[in-house]
Image 1 (cartoon, rainbow, N blue to C red):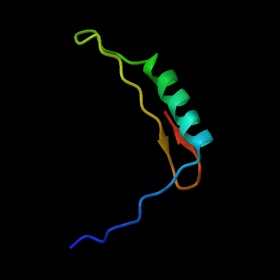
Image 2 (cartoon, rainbow, N blue to C red; image 1 turned 60 degrees about the vertical axis):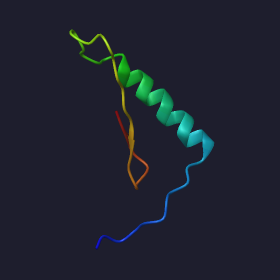
Image 3 (cartoon, rainbow, N blue to C red; image 1 turned 180 degrees about the horizontal axis):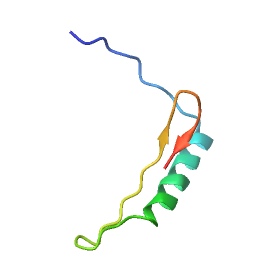
Length: 51
């Protein structure tokens, strides 16, 4: 059985930064058929953000 981990809590400033990064990533989305751009940002345990 898998171990349950406690949910992490992010500071509002961190959430805002992730939202901005995901919106920036959305600008580079390739969606010629759906015309539905999507962006994502990932925060690592070390504090790095990937988009």
